[in-house]
Amino acid sequence: MAYLTAEQHDIVSAAVAQAELETSGEIVTVLADRSDGYTDVALWWAIGASFTAMSVFALFPEFTLGKIDRLIGGWTHDWTMGEVLTIALGIGLTKFLGVLAIQLWQPLKFWLVPPAVKRSRVREAAVRHFKVGAERRTHGRTGVLLYLSMREHRAEIVADVSIAEKVPAEVWGEAMADMLAEIRQGRLAEGLAAGVRDVGKVLSEEFPRADDDVNELPDRLIEV
Image (tube, rainbow, N blue to C red; front, side, top):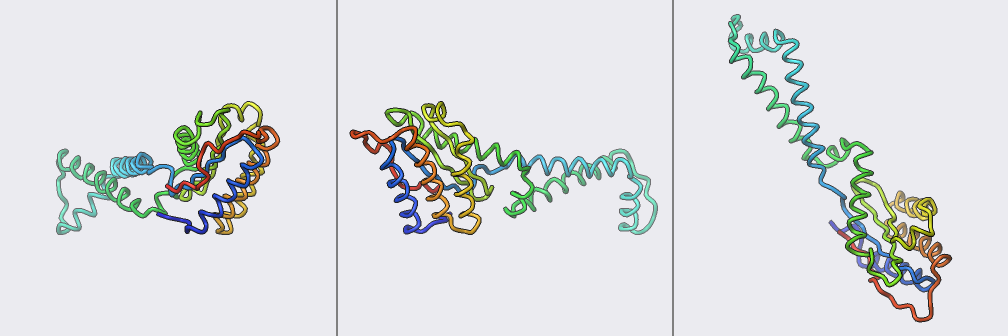
């Protein structure tokens, strides 16, 4: 799913190119639709619902069995242990499949993912992209990744080791705030560009551009 037009891509790429004029650091931007499929979370919700339904049946079997009696004609039925177990398993399986099915609606699926899990998965995805696209790919190990994950509504900034040693993680807070302020207004390209400018300002102070500096990583926005 493409979130930005070619013109909006150019806004981000231009911001990266401009920021790198003042620093030897290299800035990489990634825009992702989602950071994970959360299949495991969906399964846990389905398993939880299934066991809850079977537990309720085990605690109050007369309620469900009475309803079945009425459905089959109103006569009291002498339920065997095998029949009761079959009903319990049927309830559990129905609930399991039903909860999985309703989570096919993506807004509900992502709403059910705990915030802590989203934060963890977004961070893991950002680090993965950083390792592939920026880590150790610059001469002085001065790469920085700005990562935005749309479905989770979260962003991350990951820096290479040389930068992390000089710039505390909290310094990136201003860049994150400026970026998200624009993004909350629906201006994705402008938000990423704002974050790039702030990152570039920090890098220019700690890693000013040398006369012989070359552009080691592409300036273009990567949309995945």
